[in-house]
Length: 119
Image 1: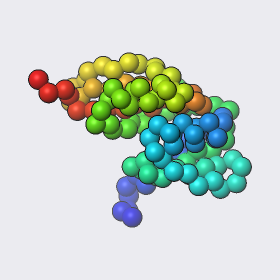
Image 2: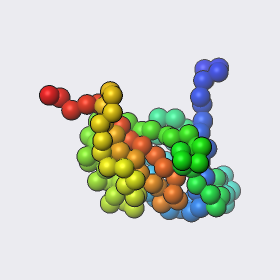
Image 3: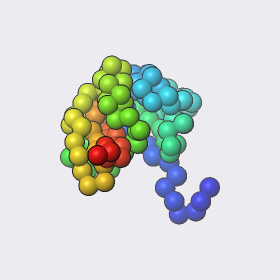
Image 4: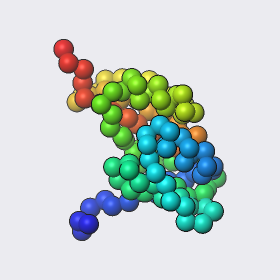
């Protein structure tokens, strides 16, 4: 482990089972439960966990936005939708790439980005 580097992230989840199923099916993450109110996730690029809470993480309320990377943005968006995610912002361009925002089953906002399309 590197000292002074971001090592772990924790996010709220109203329904741990729904979020575990969503992220497992959509992104291939694995989980380890630590009691009934906490589940750690792995295989995500940065390890973290979901804790049971009745609130959600949204940038509009001051929370950090967690951004994932995907080689194929369109197929990732389709998997998000088919597994129960809600598209908050459809694919748009920004300097350096393209991305979309989605809500997980518990209402947390995430983004997925990819490199720009080749001309």
